[in-house]
Length: 387
Image 1 (cartoon, rainbow, N blue to C red):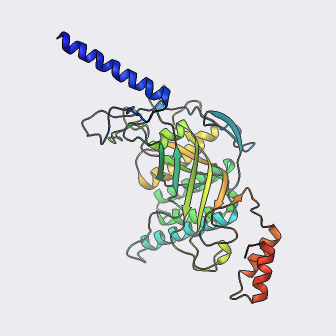
Image 2 (cartoon, one colour):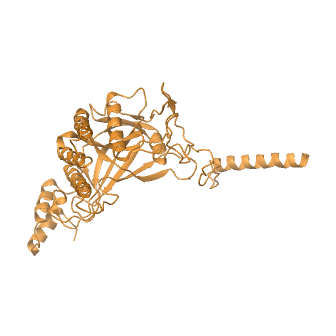
Image 3 (tube, rainbow, N blue to C red):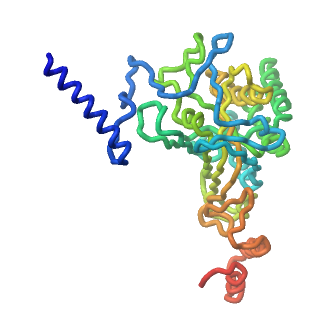
């Protein structure tokens, strides 16, 4: 017994020594922070590893409070303050440009047209793919420690069901219109869901209703079950990696790519045929717990708006955590789209060495089927391209 005890103590001492020397000398010696890896079986306890302090409201509902972002000036002054890489900094919000907005609306209208035709028995199947305007990819990064424990990486991408968000003063207007459709349906005076889709088409085309500084989605798999009556859950974890990353670091990116290449003649990307529409936004994620007693009037309204839009379509819970993406920068990442695409920042405008007047000249010349030799030389001179 003494030999075993002595051997165990020496083993502990050796491990402690290795950890200390590895840390002090910068050696490539690593030790797993989490002991539990791999998939979680249904009978095993949930894993979290998060530093999020979940709280309970008076009715027994769970909620969280983000600590690394301040959004109290987001609506009236267009400013978000966030702690990134350990430092607090203010950022000015920006509006996405009209090209993105036109593209988003065009795909949304096509989406609704397919649904309306299907429910009117005009087509046998909708043929609506995932992706496009409704399913961008959200990129986040968190921190090395305090994660779920099933991965050694704190970078994450996730495909999310995003939508554009109403202005604060438009939320009640839109909610009233939608509620009227449901009330009319109960009275036998409206055809759900067709009349609702037609209303949504009209609302989305009214560009004055929408807040171009943000988009919205839900964190479907975080905080479930939220209370004793909630039957959702069974995922094996309490929080998504997206949620954990945002709580640690709200800075993120959001990338959209069109369903198909452009057919030409559209109201975006100059109507050029054959381009693949693509935009990337850089900004911050504003997480809102539906049951947080300290929510502002706007936070509660926007949470209810996005939750209702989801649960009325898909069913399920109507109190899911809301994620509002706040736009700070926009990049046109459309391939082969010069001089405006290929990863250039368009919001706020950035000068890459081509003046606005020269860019306008190029834009006009893009409509020509073929440039003469002299015209090509003039374009090269104006753009100052090396040859």
